[in-house]
Image (cartoon, helix red, strand yellow):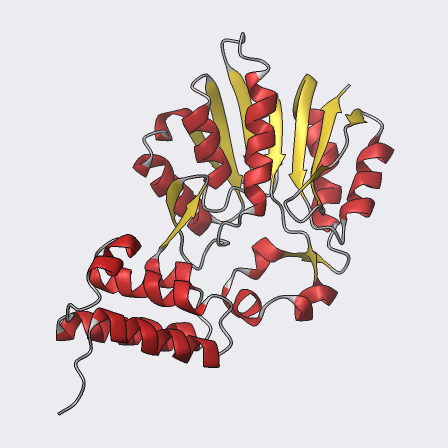
Length: 290
């Protein structure tokens, strides 16, 4: 008689299967995908080890397991990713949110709250992708008016759906534009914040295969040096920022020095110390418009 495929056995088998296929977090991946197939929370699995999923649920789980083993990121399989304690819809049209970007959000919120006396704070999120920065800003800053900008109409559709899900869409304007070029003439901002493409095309081989093969290249790669988008963004931000406004840019440690030198060379910013991430690597550039 064959062994029954209980929740516990499915998790055990799948964890080992993912480990053999080189997954970084095999147990976590197995739990997330099984919870998705069962329509429950991950924590619910721990009280259901002896239960037996139905055939339809097992079939859905098998399909996701095969795709995950072939390299598809878990977030694209579930269609969701948690960021800053909120759940965001993601699709292959947008980058998967990463913990490093939470440092950018924290810096924005801290600086904005220092202007709490203002009636309205104007924020431009350049390269909004799934809208995580724009939505978090609108969610945590009741006086903020956010302009979410992306060159991809598909990404903007994802961002808009996340804004609607978190009930902040009425305070976010969505603009299809290459950086700030398509924003209404004469419009200025108190903050320009961006997680732009900052990977050099020559660095592509150092990315994890699942990132290189599945996430949108236009949101990853800036050009041969990795600073091409930042180089264009800095002067545009300088033109659009109000006096005393802030520019915040997420960077990789590889391009940090070059990007910081560009900010200093512009001459219109007072460049603050770079914020470092949990690994103590330079991650967020801060500059105040003089």
